[in-house]
Length: 370
Image 1 (tube, rainbow, N blue to C red):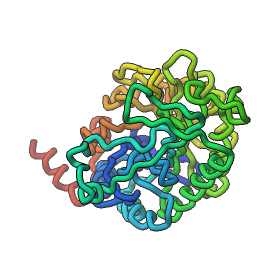
Image 2 (cartoon, rainbow, N blue to C red):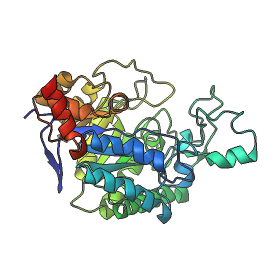
Image 3 (tube, helix red, strand yellow):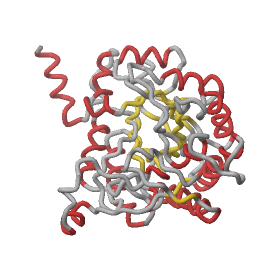
């Protein structure tokens, strides 16, 4: 069996293979509620043979959402629609994860396909669940002053920071009620926890700003609090922007230090991405973020998830064989081919047992008659 398609265990969870569907925002919820779109969007990846399907960045508080169309877990009523999707993924042999997130100063941004014409009337705004609010952040500075989609946020005070931590804890408890196997703490892509980490966004002078130790404080407090309520037999992941890709920003060296601290606090794997600030840009190419996963894995001694244009099966296999990462995560690649894991298994010499029983015999018949 190929490394890519071999089982792997984190704590009490064994994944059927090392393929992951990375979180992808759909901007299709109303008041945070999952609906039929999310069921079909996510369910197809379970049918497609992936080992773990991670739900989109899910707001821990109403103001934590990137947009009014994001999923939420800030109230008990959000649990049941998510549990329905989790149960379907389980029925297909896939594990279910959820990315818990706070957008910080990148919150309350528009949904791309709902422009002024689509939001002209109150009836139109109600139909899509339109909301608008002032974001919060470590410092009262816009993500991008040149872009009117981003507001100047309010700087969080101590009460606001405590509210954020409580929000992560309560959302993790609701994720357990919904039956999720994995929680991922989102500390990447220029969102709130990443904002606290990065000197590009954090200009505080209290215990949450200044030194690297201070800037890491909130991420570590959130991690400790979530790990305390998340069942010990279930894995906890963290997603990091390993580098801001900008001068004077968060660096690979910083991420190795942080990942070491996260590991000590019960994080089981680090999902390694990069960027997220207006000052940092990186050109995408095949496997372009794999060096970040390799650096964190070797430097902190923790399993890592590789991301970033990894759809080539042979290349994905090589990444795992060479020990650069422990998991392969796809986002756009999974959208392009929701059956990527099934096809990868066949390309690596596997049979059709990974296919859903309803389509397995058809697939086998097609192979025999070609």
